[in-house]
Image (cartoon, rainbow, N blue to C red; front, side):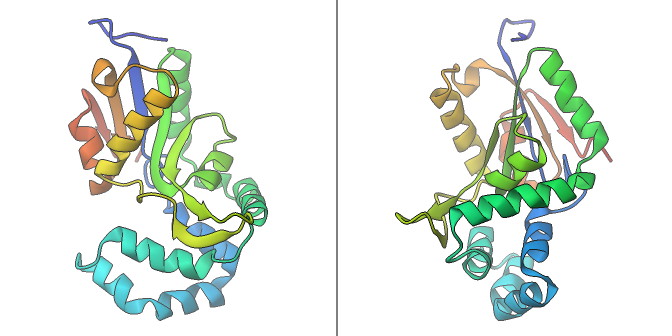
Length: 207
């Protein structure tokens, strides 16, 4: 594990969509999984919620929840994980080579590297071949192993990224966030809170 000049361990947090990738994988995944007709039908069904989100009048969590209800409700977790694996095999072209090089460089330096994303953990992990821990949005699963169409916890965006990173550190036996030198990579206002607590920030670095 590498340490900073003041002997703090170095923690590197990468946003995913738009930072490590060239596109929003939430949209790309569901358009691919559902097919264009079903995808756009769902968008039309939730038009007012999505329009409100675009205008800043509706919370992003509510907009995402509306789409997930159409996209994954009733799908088994096993089927969803299979879809995520097949999606990853056909969509690694979305990954930015420079971002992968940066991840590898930090790993080689001995830094603690994580991806913190509002996208769903399973397909993000699959796209990265499970090489990097992923802290992301989670989907609720009922007792029968079926997706309910609801989020399991909060949308991993904004302040939730900091909260989830703190929990991840504690769960994996690391020191609290304040005792690390945090390096953050991001590309949108959803990363503002994470960058606010970082000692080193990289905004849209791979474009």
